[in-house]
Length: 426
Image (tube, rainbow, N blue to C red; front, side, top):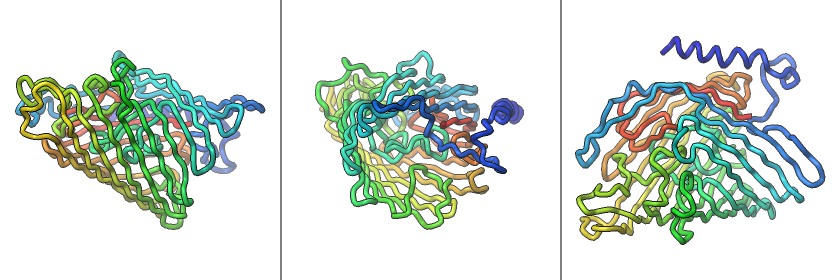
């Protein structure tokens, strides 16, 4: 595996070194002046603007350290399908700007997850439109992430790891859906976002599969200190004064079996039990019993602090599933299920603007098991800039209740995983 990593690293890094654009390099330095995620402008005239940006990841994944099967809380033994491969895991082309009025902003994108080719929603073309009335109120509609946890509240891709969350966050969070939202800044340090949407995750779900009511709501309110906390989890920007953040999130949705995306759809949310079983599985709770509809309530509280390149934070999750409906449900000995969870992270810039090291992890306290994960990793920012990085991470899993082909872990995963990622966020 070591030899493979060396070959991959050299293959990725050497061509980029030779093709670095000289005008973008600061005099006498290896740093690059480009702002990560800002892209570049293609067209600008009095009627509007058109900008382009690229996000892409290449992933090496080795799950050979996982057990080849697991047993769920119902005593059923199931296989674990592990991966050992190299994938162009995600590519996103963004086109954005304003039309007719700088307050009328648009975003369109084409998104593909190559590790999930052949499954539903591995290619997505979508977008949204927003109108900024003021800093206090921006109205938007289209595809957006439901702000139910910090990772779905506009922080992507500024995470410690490349495009993957800890197990508890993936288990509890909502996902992307079509809807309408309002967001803004209140009293300088307070930010909010409220969204009404079709369902918890519309990736891989067509309009005919949705129920006929808009029953999904998600919102968050956050406070940051006057020394701006920033979107990212780590302190790449090296805050000279302490920066703090506190956020509160809530999501409600009345979900049915048909409006849930396929099990392996990329970046989806399945309502699962803490042993990995999908709550809508026919006969899961007994012969003749099938849950077809359920009310999902989920709240989360996050907090963090940054100072001198160090960052520390965490998030607590609380989920309740009730109002169960379907054949045979009246025979159940319970009328709701409750799960709680916690995630944490600690990071530091070992070499300013160049090398970030971190540890992170999570635990779920569930009615059908208490899975957890722990991770240790780091990112090398090749040009002292967040536009391009090489990231490596070791993951220790204990009976993961979530997983997908696009993620570096699988349902039932128990053992050690290694993943190495090359990320472009231009």
